[in-house]
Image (cartoon, rainbow, N blue to C red; front, side):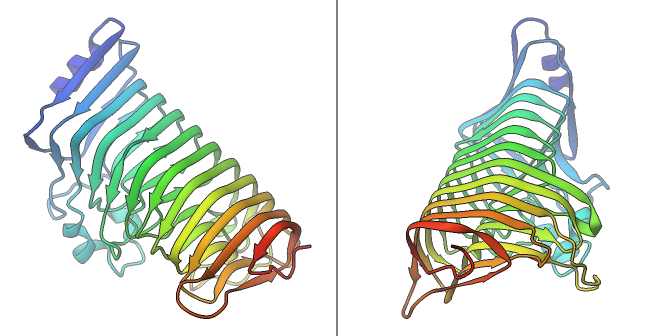
Length: 351
């Protein structure tokens, strides 16, 4: 922390904190707080930063956090590595437990920050989510490699919530949960040039848990390859939720052996929830130039509430065939919208 205090307090236009190459550092839960004296501060992670194992961990729900830092760059120059040592968590504290999420920490959190770039480093085996961007603006994540085993619980690659002007580009992500999840309060989020797999795809949501009023808008997902993932382009909301998700586009998407390539699910529930017909309102959802293969017959699933909360769904050019043999199909209930161009499988409830 002395090095951060010195770098953050240095006056001038910019300051740099260096984690040297070819060295490994064991670092416990740490919060790097701003604001800093300089206009820009750079953290160069050229070596390896390793988390402690689960058993001596404090109660903090993060490992490394940048808090209220403006003008931040974290870069690895392709050699930097954050090793969360998640394997020490998944067996003991997380796997198979309903309260997994609050127990296991997120590797890297960007909170209440602005004008941030995270680039050219690797993050592996986070105890929970690898990178979380929360209550922040103007954040660019690019040229990242994020990995965890396919069966590691809740290890999302990048999670965004309550933030705006966030871009995730030119990265490779393969984990045990969503490659990218876009949560409540997110606006103007772009996902571009991602290779995703294994994992649960790119998810907008979940929204409206426990009847909450939540919103997401202006989400642009494009040039994404899903390879051997459980889901592809997914929107999910909780039964009984309120609010809206609107102006969401999925463009130039390729699926390779994906279990559920295209999903809208408005019936997301906990096991003990009482069914509630209320729903987050979905509108202006556009799918353009989607192609590839589905592992299962049902390649498109539009499961919308009877409350009429899925409107203006547009599908423009789609060809999703069977990964092995046979035909694909679409399941569609209570969705309103239209199709144009060649669309396969045919979506029965759209015009």
